[in-house]
Image 1 (tube, rainbow, N blue to C red):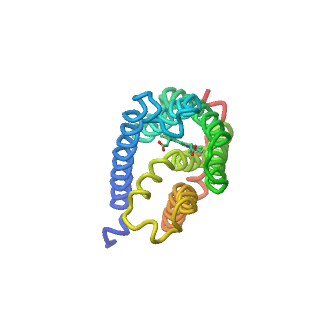
Image 2 (cartoon, rainbow, N blue to C red):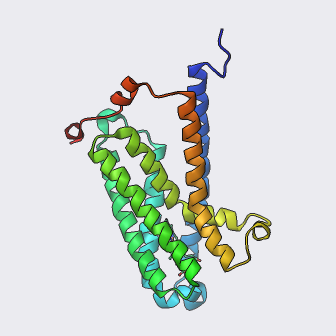
Image 3 (cartoon, helix red, strand yellow):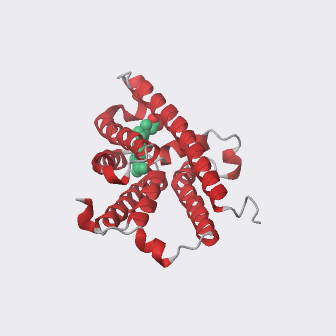
Length: 231
Ligand code: HEM
């Protein structure tokens, strides 16, 4: 007689519940972040925009693309498109990638014109690079028909997308600067931690679940689709 913990149905249900709760929490934090941002920057005056006033064009480009990626990423993960009808998934995936390119264009303009110290600008540049690389690998994976690989890379790219949301959560964590160096160096640390930590935690969860449930070769083959069957 197996215990509830070793029962595969129980494990599947528990995992699904945990993922659903995590997605709901992410939706809440992201919604709160986006609402705060757009509520703030709808007042178009120098007092609100402070150091962004002279470069508000770059900020608007950045916010348009960034907002789109946060929203579309949530839609992709919250809605489980049936495999027989993945057209909406493919289209919103494409728009997500365009949104990311728009946000990165804005981010490049902001980095180039930022008065922030080099450590902060380098941390932003590394975030943008991680964002583009994870998305590119996700795109190449699905073009080659590797569904499981695509899934994992798109989860990674979305964790990088959520870096500003994570950054804000960490920034408001009481006593954070007693653990990290004081700003501005501490801000650069926080920018790195905002995406490296979620990626590391996610990797750890995957490793542990892979160990608990080794992927059988036939199962691995079942999650690879022929590239032409997606068209
Ligand atoms: C993940 C890749 C991202 C990178 C590399 C990035 C980069 C940047 C950079 C360079 C700045 C200007 C900082 C400065 O001039 O000191 C900035 C500001 C900002 N970004 Fe992003 N960003 C990313 C994602 C996002 C997303 C997805 C959003 C969602 C809308 C977003 C919202 C903002 C906001 C609201 C600001 C202004 C910050 C403030 O009000 O103090 N960013 N970002």
